[in-house]
Image (cartoon, rainbow, N blue to C red; front, side, top):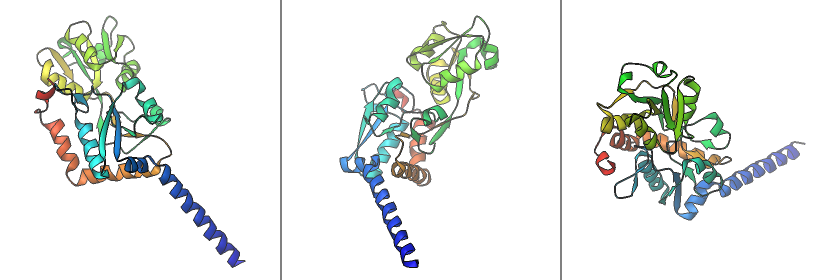
Length: 266
């Protein structure tokens, strides 16, 4: 009996090992290594995460992190510009290997895709007409006021959840939305704190009020297809290493503590 049990355990172990090998062979990470190229889906319109320079190059915090990632993998980096409303579909149809585009981790998105550990946390803030300086979002949520945000992002979700009396309008890009406030056609713009802080410092001082207390908690994460534990394991280990060997800090300081990069895009 002991010999039979031992034989069964050995067979079970072999089957599990075969399953592990099968997972690796199907892994996106294995495909990246074999291909020699990391393909990254992103929408280049979210300062300072990913944006186009005056020369037409896609630059930003996420881009530099992906460059570091590709280097760690020993492969080339290929950026795949993608419209936001189709970015998850593009991942699911294997147009790219990973989404690195300032995507907020949400439970709804997590039903379709998996996220690596969050690499940064942000929240929704408000750029508003100067008359709202020192006020709160509740002061803006009045009948007759107009609040704008970008279509299909967490800013829209937060806006519709919180603003019950003001009129809500959405735009395809954050640039078009905030310009409505600049032009006096809207009272407030709801969007991510990094973008609002940068826009306020560059164009909004003296023209807008920056209500910088976050309305929400929003962790950002890299998104991958489901059923790929090897890729998720690698990504989480890469992020942990980057945060402890100075790579993450160097890239973070470049895009969030310095303003030198703004000359390339503004």
